[in-house]
Length: 309
Image (cartoon, rainbow, N blue to C red; front, side):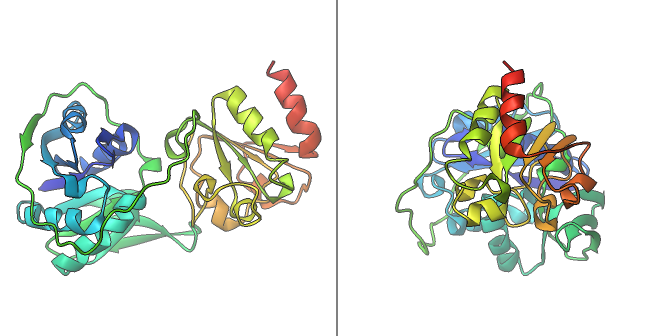
């Protein structure tokens, strides 16, 4: 069986972590062809060609794909779909934007947030905020799938697949890019960081969130937040971890002042080691934590920060 995997790109650059983890998942379905669709994506295609398990890379270099607009990229994927039984992407904001359109154009279902692959027709995915696992079996001739990459290891980078430049398709002109407003940060990207320090409603204010950021910077970590903290204005939207935010699975997840609502747990419970600091010993976060400290975060976090030197 042949698999077409849409690479995750950021402009002309390849998001190696997301793409490499998606490649690992896709290998269970068959021979993997990676599609890089962006403006000036030659470098991204060459980088994708190094990923272990990639049979071939297709490079669609066109200004229409440069800002990730769903409509032209969906049309491109549909034009290539005839050669593939499975069409796959990481379950990122980009993948979740493009793939429902691909599925609609192909008149098939979209199978989203896949965390396990049983066979070419059968997939596992979380439901009810991760409290239950759903097994989905599809009889569609084309399977359109987004992969929740947090649960997969990244493929190595010792491969040498061929890169083929392909013709683009006409831009349907249904939308146009106006501008991107990107917050600059020296911290690791949240979904690929090996350490994440997250704060919740218990932090109390936007000003107090500085202690979360200080600890994260000392650990070389990304900063996360619960939905309650984001809704309260303590942290920006792109820091939100959870069912309606980002899904992370770092080596170490430190939850500070987070009660542990099921919506938040759905986004971080696959972390390798979970540390929780909360003054409420009945907080649900302690049920999933590997290490828990019942303490006032305003005492515990400065003490931890000082101990780290």
